[in-house]
Length: 209
Image (tube, rainbow, N blue to C red; front, side, top):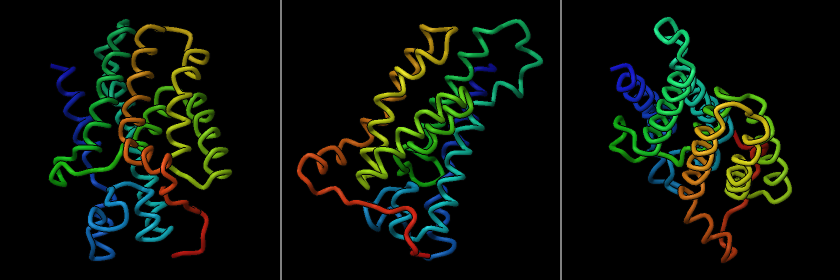
């Protein structure tokens, strides 16, 4: 019962369509019909500007952090059950990413789950998250391709976690590999555009409002 509760809560948290709601409430547009037609922070920056973009990014990351921390709210019934705690944490995390990609509150048309995945890594291991974020920033700032930064960080994530998370290795290895693959699969079209030279560059720190 607790497992199902965590999965449901994680999915509902992930399903909060931040970019869609911000676009409709403050700009009168559906972000999924503009730009790359993706309901994520990157498209929000491009279409709605940096203020809306930073807000969407912050909320989407927070969704992942909250989902990863859900088992802490039930810690009183998990005392002494370390393995069960981790399983609940990973299930809640996966369901949050699934909810972000297929949100029930936005007709199951969501984003790619990158920001929410970052939040999950922060909630599970902040140090691994910092390394992944540093890799993303180095690649993004040098190339101006958000997608390339996200893909590179996703590829590195399992290796980073293997050396930074010493316990529960088998479960964590599976989790990090699957999460990394999900991020890469979500960027299939971006990979095609990168290979054909059609991917758009971006500057998150531009002066666009």
